[in-house]
Amino acid sequence: MADDSEWVLESIAGYLGSPEWVIPVTDFMENKCTVFDDEDENKLTYTEIHQQYKELAEKLLDNYMQEVGINEQQFVEACASPFAKSKTLQGVLQPVLASDDFQMFRSLMVQKNMELQLQALRVIKERNGALPECLMDGEDVMGELEQQEMKILQEVLRRSKEEYDMEMARRTLLEEEVGTTSSSCSIPSVPNGTGPHQAPPLAPAPTANSAGKTSSTAAKKEEKRLVLGKGDKDQKSPAKTGGASPVKPPAERGGSDGKTLPAVRAPVTGAPVSPKEKSNSNSQAAENWLEEAQKEAGISKPFTELSASQQEQLQQRALYLRQQRDKLQALKKEQQRPKQGQPEEAPAAPTAAPSTQENVPKKAVSASNGNSSQPGGAPQGDQKPKEISVEERKKLQKRKHLAEKLKEEVIKK
Amino acid sequence: MGENQKGLFSVIEKLKGTTELEFRIVLLGLDNAGKTTLLKQLASEDVNTITPTQGFNIKSVTSHGMKLNVWDIGGQRKIRTFWKKYLENTDLLIYVIDSADKKRFEETGVELAELIEEENLKGVPILIFANKQDLATASPAAEIAEGLNLHTYRDREWQIQACSAVSSEGVQDGMNWISNNIANKRKVE
Image (cartoon, rainbow over all chains, first blue to last red):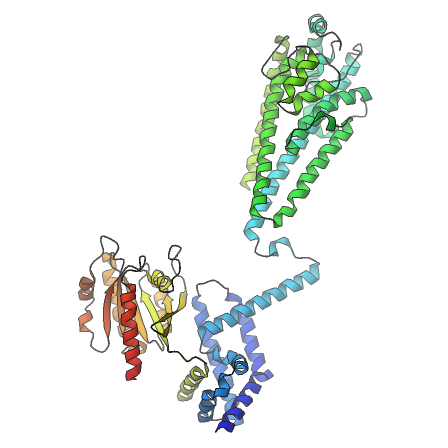
């Protein structure tokens, strides 16, 4: 009897390893396993598939036993023998046991499904070299969030660059304008003004603040008008004039870049930029800015695979950028008024003005001899600035509107 | 052939290396009766994140030295037609009723009466959980028993147990009844 059961079990174990069993059973599992996930809840179809499996397994076993001549009695005795309870045999018999044990069957199917999925991933990897991001490990939700965030961030950066370009374009145009129309002006650079309409302050002589203000008001006015017209045109096609213009004399560059650089940089880096760090040429400024932006992007991209806290940081950074931009815009608006009356000074003074709010008062005061460039203080030349600021405000508002729309679109996506 | 298959079944059962007593329990009842909550309570799992069951859940619970494989099948009307497929080889039926949902007492009574008629459940003990007793509007278990005509059941053991699956009150009492009856039934067999 004991011999019998050993023989029977060995025979059956051998059959379970033969293609006659393995091929149909593997076929069945590979065909049906796709619906089996590792969710806690079972689907009703699992039961149906289990039933089919049961029928298949029994049919195969039945056929084999008849073929070999094992009768049921022998089989029962063999199964009851201690040999059948050994771990190795239990492992071999697992596919048979699964026909009666739903949970065992389920785990087999889930495992098979996972194997197939991994195989598919490998194939994709081999074919494409790398896995598409959407197939990366369980990152669907994170990835989506990330993408949204990246979009927002990129939008913010893009807008920041646009603004910068626009400003640069306007300034170069202004400078050209100044250069041609008011060639009499000894120093055509645009120092303090952050806004596009700061050309007027160029007109007065650099040295005498008060004198320039009082005597050349009329001339300034005219110039401003001219400049304004130009500025408007230029706004419509900022891209063309975006780059640093080669027309500008080097002296101008020094003066103007001081303003622009901090204005853009401050928000991007997220920390006050000391005047020393600022570069001295426009092109360099642009480069720096781009670098900054790239860094920003470069840092954030790897973040896709990083923790939530880092994502949060990213978000905060984006928020910060936005806030800084808003602040700057407000600052610009305010500054336009006081700046009108301000003469140009040493490049050092202008640089400070736009960089950060704290810097503004100190530097501006020291540089402009009491011509406060603080946002609040609107000094002399109130009338002229107002004319400009009305138009300027309209423009700004338009721009803000556009930005808002863009933002909405981006976020809604 | 049919005989032969049945024989093979029992053989496979013996193939399993299990030494402890194993029982199959099916947990049924209308949707929103609290079947899955009860199941999770039995398995000492979190009962706060339960959603309507679209398929079925299985938990193995050890009670009084017995391994109880409890099958909780979804109770929505469209799923009820599948209940039949899970009744084979069942050792005990747990039927759960929402004691506070008086409007559906009739519906739940009809479903239970149909189950009682099932061939696969012939002679199978039934434990009825009068669930949601934590709600103020819940009917007492005795009232429900009367409404269900439980006293007319002659061919099987039955028990009605008031309980709250959320707070687990009364659940253990029901489990005690189960272990007593299942063990007895096996002995008789």
